[in-house]
Image (cartoon, rainbow, N blue to C red; front, side):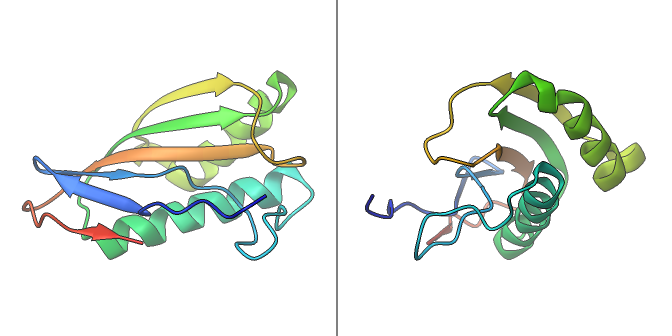
Length: 121
């Protein structure tokens, strides 16, 4: 499989929208962790890093894609541990993810303090 090319985020209209974020090695496109908790923690930390790079303010919404509904309770625990009382709006979907062994992918929408019109790769 060829690595896809896309921006990590785009900005406009006062918001930053992330691309899908997943715990994948960019060289091999294999999961960086075999377990759900490891993938979820890595993905949430990467989300924080992408939003910081974009200059985002308040996180408005997180959309989560899970490989199996049996992961939902563990996702709730990871989400609560990461966000606590500052949790954004959230949607969780169960779907087939494109890479074998990938258990979770996130995308997000956050407010910008000002619209800087940037994209990042």
